[in-house]
Amino acid sequence: MYKIRRAEKLADKIYLMDVEAPRVARHCEPGQFVIVKIDEKGERIPLTICDYDREAGTVTIVFQAIGVSTEKMALLKEGDAFRDFVGPLGCASEFIHEDVEELKNKKYLFVAGGVGAAPVYPQVKWMHEHGISVDVIVGAKTKDMLILKDEMEKVSGNLYIATDDGTYGQHGMVTDVIKKLVQEEGKKYDVCVAIGPMIMMKFVCLLTKELNIPTIVSMNPIMVDGTGMCGACRLHVGDEIKFACVDGPEFDGHLINFDEAMKRQQMYKTQEGRALLKMQEGDTHHGGCGHCGGDE
Image (cartoon, rainbow, N blue to C red; front, side):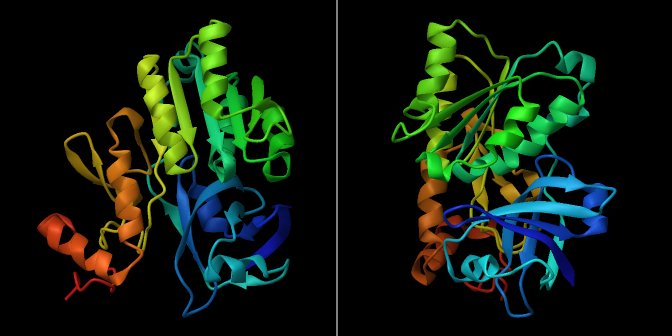
């Protein structure tokens, strides 16, 4: 069992938890994720890692209560425990393998949308700990939905906030802030990292492609097993078929077929949709999810 050391409500239906998982904490890196399960019969829920403390042996997760399983998670308190806490899964952010001195010569822009601030935070924190100053844009629907603002301020070089309704920061979308920084203030970026809802990442990538800024995104499609067997997180990246859980979750955003990914995400939610995807995708669909018969 994996005990919850801290449970905090950050905003409406958005929760943060520090979970005691020493082995995961020792090995996780920015960009990776975990899969949690409340009890033996519970749903496997993939969550990107928000933070980690190797000495304390804890991993921080942030999630939004949007379904039965996450609503049950929201009821957990300090002292309660998860049945399973599997990780770290996926590949770490590529920049952690680069030479730090070379990274200092690059200008990074991180863009977070909504709960995407959680996986952006450990990446910005890693940069800060290695003496690299980066610009960060955080977008939210409204001031009340803004999360991790204070934490992000401590580790970012410049923090820009945008809210859809204008209740805090700039009124508008994160793309409006990017346009302002690049086109009006003349800022130049070598790399953009965008994490958030697929529709947000799609429009960030359309803009950064126009601005000629290489862009990395963290894909968050439906996942079941987290090992590449079920095929639920199948993506087209350029001409290649990739699986977010084992090949990602980070990819070149300018190569992602976002429209296909979003359509597939919706289809995978129904039994009929899963059956159709299995038929359309043939041998590349994979099996093992236990829903569409691919494991038979």
